[in-house]
Image 1 (cartoon, rainbow, N blue to C red):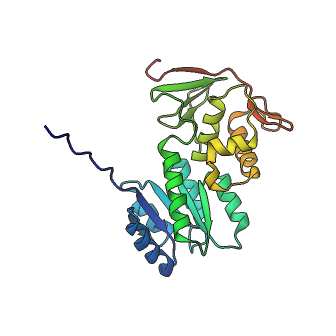
Image 2: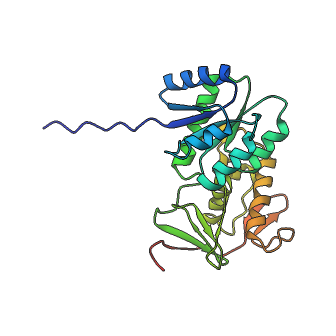
Image 3: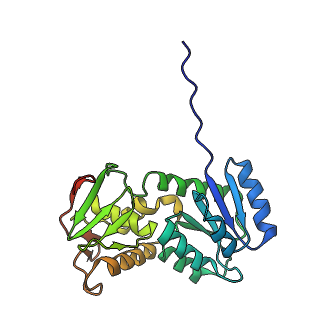
Length: 251
């Protein structure tokens, strides 16, 4: 009796948001030839309208657009939809690139870019998103509890001691997962970059520092005097808390 045929995974869904038609349309055609299902939006408003339907697996987002800019739309995508995002930026937008990484964008490419490099970065981000973005050690139905906080990795939901949900970006989620899976261990910047962003992202040490600062502002009573995520001078960072894992269905 012949073995059943393997079912093919559906193609990853991409949304390109860029007001430059001369870039957007050829890029969509190229990515379609690479096996992606590609939709296009000429503005942030157009993107928001399309996002009312089925969410894409990843958004390619231009920063400078008329009307609502890419940074504002990126913040919405990350905080409300948790959709992986790659910025398409011009050479002179270094500050905007840094801001984008701080608010949780997964990567960026600088125009004009090599299409094959963009495809490699898209696949890298999709792989990280598929495995949860951190080390992947958490069991699907486990939640983490620490110092009154609870993180449900499957739902990507962070709640405080009162049960209130605290919005967390995809980059902040990956960073927090790295700490929770290695409590009371010193994690240097290189290791955090490797676990959280992946070497292929070509990010820089300051991106880790900025994400730690953002995470502290959400977790710490006084982010200027952090007690949970401590700086280990010359070493990196450490989560100074006991971490308990429990099954999600409990309580």
